[in-house]
Length: 138
Image (cartoon, rainbow, N blue to C red; front, top):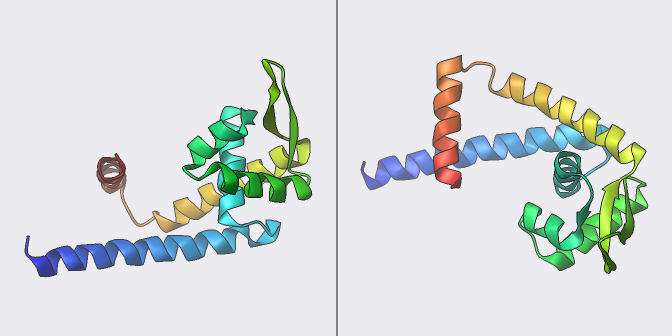
């Protein structure tokens, strides 16, 4: 592959990523929630209540940034902080009923969005793309 081909591949990738990012923001508009908050809700839906440090690890962000994300979600009534029963010094972050409802609605909207976005690909192309993306991610 020549340098021009690699640049073209990178440009194609970033073009798709940009399109996905814009589409994701539009999908989140009804809930007035940003992508970082949506990611945190998704992690909590998948794993249940977590310590802030574990949530930070799952989100791949600094603990300080995680505190800001949790503060924003707590202000909206989507999460609550509670004592960790295994360590009184630690705090767990857990979804509220409203957080679970919003998280589920966002998941359904994002699944529909992904189906539309990738809808032109047949099953073989989807499988190939998933394999390639996993290879690049890892």
